[in-house]
Length: 235
Image 1: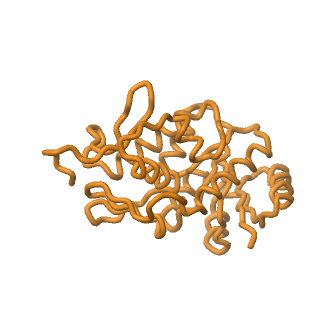
Image 2 (image 1 turned 90 degrees about the vertical axis):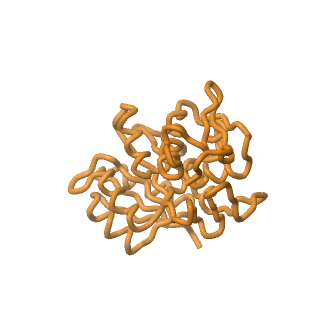
């Protein structure tokens, strides 16, 4: 059964172009031209992935993410004409999985979509289905994470990063390596994406994100996952 891509953008020409591109790749495509219509469409079509413009009438991309994330964890790729890093970081912090800056190559966008769908649709072969570390329980099959028995709401990218960390405790992952695992290809200039995802993860699973017990920074290299240190409260 073909995957459904939902396009959300107020530029008619871009919608038409991307619809043709993704239909040629075998996807089912639905589209909306503003955030309010997109909320309705997402509820009824339940797309496998959403490509979302930031600047739109009635409800912008950030507002859409805020509402949609209360209902579903659909993978989201942001399209933005803004070049400021802070604008991209806001989207990632709100729950977007990736972003592409306009103007962009449709082929690059297709590659990003394919990589994200492969990642979110896989069951991480070669990894245990259930991973535990102190108070953290991660279930690959149900895509659920608990901390001290309390469910934690993670985006798909956050979940995958945490699964990578917990599958290899003590191993140092470079930012580029984490990006390649997430996106399936080498992407230059996106190191900040990983930093934002890690910051979000720490806020959700650490007792004190300012003094993380689990996700440690290895300065000049990247990150590693460590078991709780003896004598420290893991709650």
